[in-house]
Image (cartoon, rainbow, N blue to C red; front, side, top):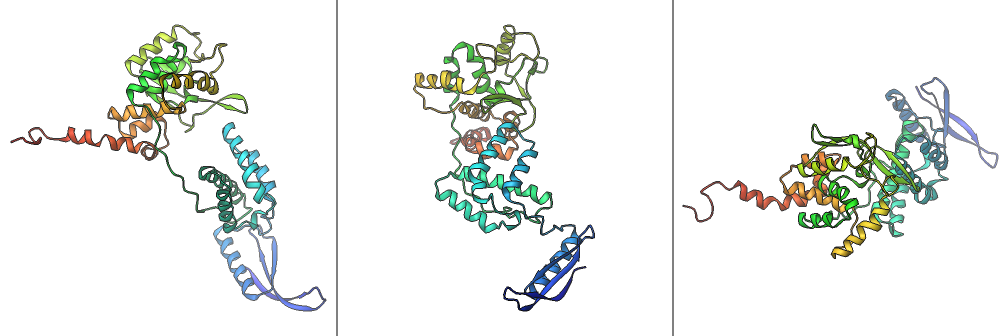
Length: 366
């Protein structure tokens, strides 16, 4: 139970004035007190404290007197994320979050402060996407502070995020995608065929091992991914942190079977390697193989990810459902698949309408 009592407080000039002190015991039965100049403020604080204690939401008002600089260092040290994600978080903290809020106390951060910060980033010319990423990192860091009972609420919750203009995924139609794959130097052709047919992310494709090819079930298992972080190649989980088994078309199955005859029989042997037998770095394949190929064929310069989108377009054109495409592509949900490729499903509506036409009901039929 919180109690409000009238007390006297000395002013700077030595005079005494009335004030109002709230006394209460926290959940650990430790006596606490806070003094206010106005009785109304004291009563409001007392009511809030009582409610929070009853609900189990109590947070010591002094716990939030931690500078964001200090809390960020502790938070980052406890993160369990991919190395590339950690590097991204640290970059956003260093360049965007801590220069503005680093010296502020957790308890002193207000929703309006964060909204002004977002506006200033956009005024500086930072892309909406990058600004959103910075807000998300700040929100995660403050969520952890709430969980640690340093602050009662996260001021970044339900904050208005910058809007992003979603661009349609760049992809090649089936004929052009096949032309690209056939024009690739033979050493890389199977890798490119896997990318353009099954839609693997580049990191997933170059992390494939001999044991991932399941001839019995005619499946290709995607279990890990390769990422380059600060110049180092690191194997880790896939982007969605989920494994998946992809159906292999007969022609691709045959090519993989022939390829396996040419590599080391060790189950851990990588399917695709560089000249010295190590993993294929993205930059090398992009700069030395992909871009020259696009120039040679007179195609626009796009990233290797265009092959992933081309694979999705091929699946959709073949009649795959959003759920099937999601499963093969490794998306978080079918809703995300529709967000990225919804326009491609729309393009198939006319063909669907023609297939739905009943016999004898075509235009002019009697």
